[in-house]
Length: 198
Image (cartoon, rainbow, N blue to C red):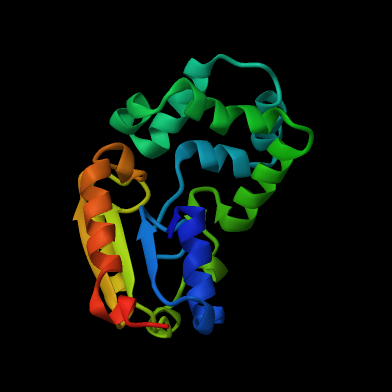
């Protein structure tokens, strides 16, 4: 199961090591994996040569939690961020103050994106998606800012055993409807073609 970057890694694993992935659940847009995905304005800023370096330096400085909430709202949506506790906000903002972490985050974004556009080598082709043999459940938030659910459907349809569910919420839809997401995941994991596997 993966969200965002975790979703991208899950799909890569299902292609590269199919014997190790018996089923997968992708919750929210899987980073740069699906054609049409776009990064946020803040991500584009981080990938810029000069402005990105300045933001990277600023991320290491103490800042109020409200600033982190505002930054997360761009990617996750207001309702999801309002549901996050202060501790969850701190889990997103405080690690970036550790030595090397902001630089590492910026390097990752630069490897994934050019501005807001995913690097072509990170977008899975139809042929690559067709090689995913295991059952895959996609839970896609109706307000996911990275790609609209209806625009994701054609790529997901290339996966032979994919199931696509458009759900209430944004990029982290479990914050918007935890019970609804859990019920869909539970139903998927109890399917006979998954539970029958050794």
